[in-house]
Image (cartoon, rainbow, N blue to C red):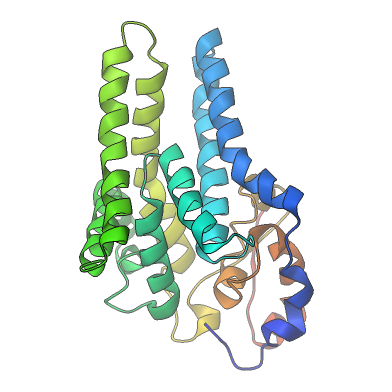
Length: 268
């Protein structure tokens, strides 16, 4: 996306592009640290804590996968393929399907050929009801688009098998520990909020130009809790910039957005 009157990436954020090795490893390992905390909580019987931990895992995975998809973490092509798999498998999702559909979303929203952006055209209740089929439809769209590409289809098929295998393993292990099945069910059911939280709320009532097709939320607590995912407009305008640098990008863009009449939504 590009918008008239906004500075180029080189002008506004070239220095925001580099990612240190420490930051890269933090982003990639954070989801697995969350899984480790879930295992600890399940082992200790702290089931009341597990929904919060799974929420944290979701936020960590979505944030880092965004950066992997947009090649903003400095990974090689081979590392990117494995990172997509490694991040997706944490939540029993297809990282490769997400890459295909998310890049399409950035290219074409709000086109009819944007399966990820489709919930933005639904009602609130429609977006909620769409949750259980959302990821399946994204996967099928990506699989059809990968016709003739055996490597891409292999990744997609392996990732499609993972949820079934983990759920089956959770059932088999239930007499010994309920942890695996509880985690798997939370991951699957938790993904049902994607159409609402990641598409409908940021994009509904979208306008005709890049500055009005999505929103940005500003604050101290909510953006931090969501690891800067609330800076959705900034991400769409400059997707090459890694997530952890979006607050600084937003600060630099504030005068330009104000002149364009864009008013960020204020949250706590």
